[in-house]
Image 1 (tube, rainbow, N blue to C red):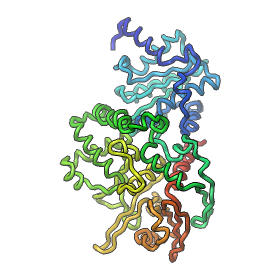
Image 2: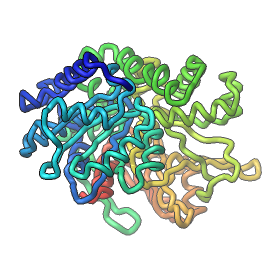
Image 3: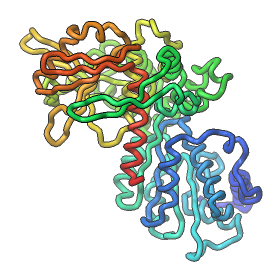
Length: 487
């Protein structure tokens, strides 16, 4: 791209606006007032770890707080003594930067600051929404190799597409970091209701396990329904104005931008209306079993195109496909059926209407909310079991943890929004059959309010309220992420 002197001055002017700490020594007050996500405690040490010469690739869906996390990181760097003029931020999707390479933008930052980047100092350069630059991964790889005293951090909203390119071009040079929608654990802490929980111990498969019980299940269930409707995105949680019409915010800033702009530009999609119809159908039926055959009949979209749309929607972190196993937790050789979950249940509220605790879809949305706590968990193989034997016995188990090496089930969970099964555990015939078939002695079943334990022949069924279970899983997901990064 050829620069005119006028264009160069315009870009430099924009850089000064986007980096107010160069003169003010702090980020805008708007960002300072926002509470940091719990993932900040994991992300910041990665950014400041100079033991490896790597770039950090922050990825996740729209509006989960990636840009806010970058600004919180900038502020903490300044608070920790880094010179504000050694920190640079560039939003790649800003129109004036269109077609400008990452290194060219870096050089313009240096020109704006009127200082050379020397090996005697360390610098931090943040590129936001990097997916809008063609071949960004090649540009970034070159920068990492050339400037070993600069920590390059990039972010993007097309998570799977960024990860694919990161894996292909950034082996040994990029560290991926995924920021998911809010977990229920984060939601509770952001709303400052953690006092509703008390740690408890339970006997589990010969060991003692800790989980989070509650002192007020009625209030907690109200918050859980609130989370299902509004809890996935920080701005919705804290803005009363947005909560009056969350559909407009989520549809416009998350769904529409992804379906109408991000995915078409990344994959060359022609019929965006068709893509929108497919997503709307999936959102309405989140948590139910799908097949390409049935989806094609209902939507009129060809099966090959449906496969692509589902792949694209997963890439945008809007949905997650969960694969099916049989009653021994083995994968089907020919996958005909599968389940699809929204990555956060509040996406459904945005398209339709808020759900109540007695709505006919409450079971599917509670299950979606539970899966939303598991989906960000890296390295955990989860599935659902569904089988039919000789046209006689058939059954299903909602969540099964798979031992990948042995291809055997490690644990099983049945998700219920009812206390009925805590009083009548014998009605959980599918779960009991699955446990017996796989010689498993324990399983967890969620309830609406009940906490109890039943000995069923050779098996123990532990019942806990689903809101408590979701909170515990969300907490463990964040703790597991800390461990994965060595924190």
